[in-house]
Length: 51
Image (cartoon, rainbow, N blue to C red; front, side, top):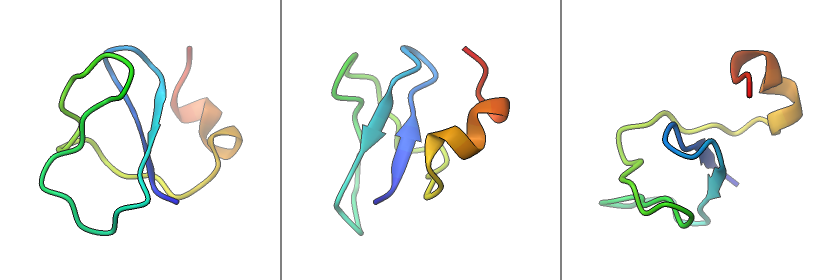
């Protein structure tokens, strides 16, 4: 399942959609459409996304 890390609140947003016109963070409401999608589990990417 693809997910995006919100650069505004640092929370993960998941989507089951394969096509979307807009992707909003469910936590803070910011637009994540232009943020890169991730398919790897977060624990494999923690060094790329420090807290």
